Length: 139
Image (cartoon, rainbow, N blue to C red):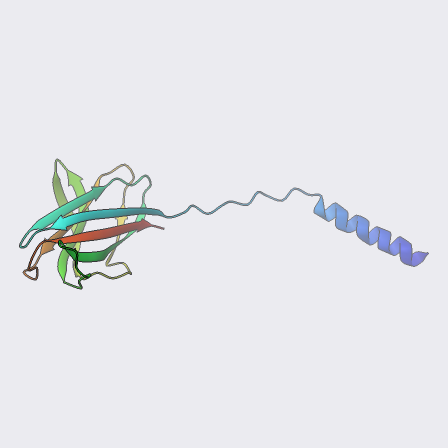
């Protein structure tokens, strides 16, 4: 009998501890991802832009460079700059020479509701126009 009473007391204690409201779980904010395609001409410069919906750290990656005519992807080196766009002018605040890859070339800050830009320039390596894609991720 003492054994049953002990089990009932233990069950009552477990039930009482489970009845307290647990704080609601907070779902993590998914990353904001921007894909910025464009075309770059021989000896040219091309600018693409985006306006983030939140401020934070941005990982900027040149993910693809392909010939204008359907050909294989290229690992050609380009100048890549990142900055803000105002009145059609991209003011570059960070730059690097970049070939396509999957990890970030630049890690920089962005401000919500401010138009940011990525500027790509040929440094003499292009033999013809290329299509490119830049990915910007705010984790």
